[in-house]
Amino acid sequence: MSTAGTTSADPTMAAQNYGLIAAFDTAPALYHAAEQVRDAGFRRWDCITPFPVHGLDKAMGLKRSIVPRISLAGGITGFCTGMSMIWWTGAYDYKLMVGGKPLFSPMFAFPVSYELTILFTAFATIGGMLVLNGLPMHYHPVLKHDQIRRGMDDRFFIVIEARDDRFDAAKTRALLEAAGGLDIKELEA
Amino acid sequence: MSTSTATLAANPGATAASGAGASRALMIGVAGLVLTAVGFFISHDSHAVALSYLVGISFCTAIAIGMLLLVLIHHIFDASWSVVLRRQFEHGFAAFPWLGLLFLPLLIGSWMGTHDLVWPWMNLNYDMHGTTVGEDILYQKKSGFLNLGMLTGATVAFFLSWVWLGARLRKASFTQDQDGDIKWTSMNRVTAALGIPMTAISLSFAAIYWIKSLEYHWFSTMYGVWFFANCIRGALCCGVLIMVWLYRRGDFKGILNPNHFHSIGQLMLAFTVFWAYVTFSQYFLIWNANVPEETFWYNLRELNHDGSTNQWWYVGLVILFGHFFIPFFALLSYRFKITHHIITKIACWILAVILIDLCYNILPALKDEHGDSLPFLSMNLVWVLSSVVGVGGVCLWAYLRSLPTTKIIPIRDPRIVECLTHHE
Image (cartoon, rainbow over all chains, first blue to last red; front, side, top):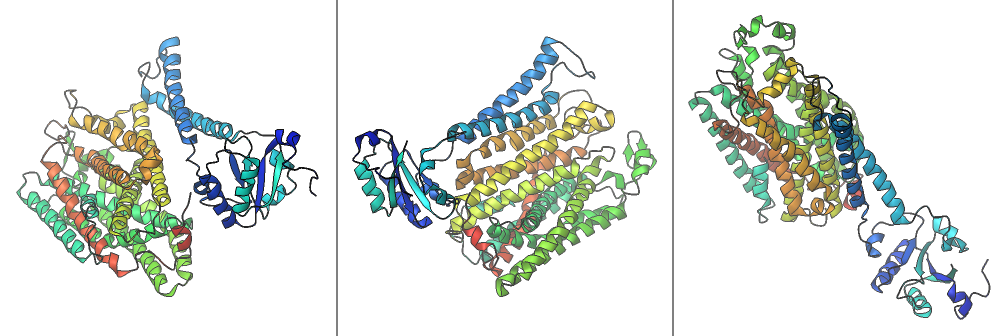
């Protein structure tokens, strides 16, 4: 079922245009098309595939994720929290001598700090991943595309957003066509 | 072992035959062994030289055991990325018979004379806090386990089991190169299921007999695990050195990609944390319980009888920072893990600190007339290094001699394609 009347010439539709979607039949076709989109300098675009295509991140020109840095920050925060919490409770706020040990020692604060390092690293990793992916996301324009379910089955898609500085309805469509894109459609925002 | 591998790694013009490298390694090894032997006979303290040799042979044996465990673990998990590396570890198993042979002098020395060449408890007349070992109730209770026959028998059994497992894994893997039969993979999986508990038990008891029993009053349930952590860390570091060396030589060009280095680097990081976990746990429980039967072991490594700090306290700090913090933060970086010259430096660093860790566990058993541990910086370090070069040179020779006898990678392993296209 195709949505009738959506042409690129219609100015009112263009205002709500999310971008262009192109279909590909095989993973290699998608891979090489992605390389061309990357080389054309687009930044706001994505690939939709039914399974992970190895090496696609390179073909898309994606950098390594910054999630590990967020994890490290979380870990350091957790470690410092553990150390200062044990110091504050046992050696500052309510001085308590236990088993003839000093009021504070990194030795007995270590297990707590270590557990909090892991806990905060896990929170930072999950949280960082969710934020960077823009999750949770309840709506995405590609969901309106009548073919999109095949993206979970046997078809591959490239979506280029109209927000991208290099986006030009006619030129971008030509680029996708030249790259082997099939059934190129405009997506409603 | 590390020293010689690093020397070779810096020489990209090494011939494919490895023959010249093998004979050079053997010459260096024999020179190291001869130097140690000379030290043993001229030194006024043959006990110190024997313990230094124990450090050297434990170091090399630990690395070989680590390689064995990594291959066994590889098979039990049906791993794919490590197929190429596994072949190199299989060549490493060629060192086991020689390690067993090189351990013999310590056993022979223990059977001769007053029996306390290496392990003081073997001499029942050995002075122990004003009494003798034979009259010490703690020894008497443990004598069923701690006696010359048991240690000899156990050590022989350990080496036989490692030689047997290594030979079995080698045979299956090398034969599969010829006939491509899947049954060899299944056979290795069975060997792994059997070999993992066998090796876990043997390496734990080896650590207890060879190293921990030097202070037989002491006890720690973490000891075998601590040794295991060092075994795996040493083997992973040697794995990295071999990978970089064969890559530079050209054999592994087009075979290894950055993801292989990333994967082994991740294991190095994981076992850095694991080592720290068990080592800290051992220290922390003893520190917290604060009972003299256990704390004396650490006191020997911190204080003299007059309360002054001894050298081992600083060695302990070197281990804390050098064996954990520095490798931990270095290995967090993705770039460091995949950059050959950086991961090589990290691997050499960890190998050096493993050796220091073994010194820390073995050498303070040498004591002066006050019962204080003899200092770390002493002539003993020369014997430690000559032993490592000696035993390591022989191990390297065994590895290099085995290397050209098979294909550089197991071309008919069912997982080889997955390995060659390894990705994150």
